[in-house]
Length: 219
Ligand code: B16
Ligand code: MG
Image 1 (spheres, protein in one colour):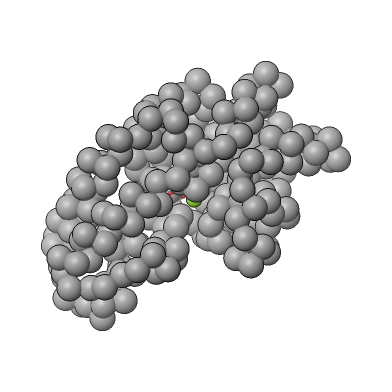
Image 2 (cartoon, rainbow, N blue to C red):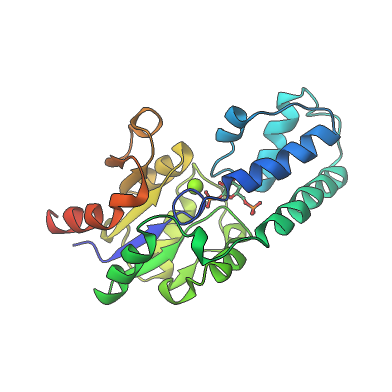
């Protein structure tokens, strides 16, 4: 019954979390807030604006900036992030993802990308994966970000499928909640500890293709 797969980007197709962290850390340092790699985990799947809010709350500075000032901070972060993305090449596609995408294409599955990142089209381009995605959902076109289900529901709509015909693949806690609340079957990539609410969890992307095949066959 499954006819489509909707992918998250960061942590599933490629690992840009490290670049996000470098750029957020630089920004947080500038405004006197200390963040570490553990805190960065809580920003996975969270939009740019909401990530800044969480950093400001961490430094108890949530009331210190006007929206205009926050927009400037967001631009500083993103400009730095974009310079880091210049290094991205097709070699940065995560293990087994290319094989999975090829399998899906050969077997006529519809494929969508549901990333919170406004930079997703640029990243997919740099990874040379354009031909595999029927659509990339524009995260600014949906009302609420992950963990709201909106972005996955919109992905299904854009590829012309019912939500129960789609599988969603995510590495973040917020993202798995988003898939589940969209009434899709969720495949979590990472640790059982954070992702126990997923329908199935695999520790890394290495077994993704076979996992999708077995889920599809047993449905
Ligand atoms: P941008 P995903 C998310 O990507 C990242 O995990 C998150 O750390 C980032 O803040 C967000 O994209 C927005 O990215 O600043 O490029 O618009 O996991 O939803 O693919
Ligand atoms: Mg992610």
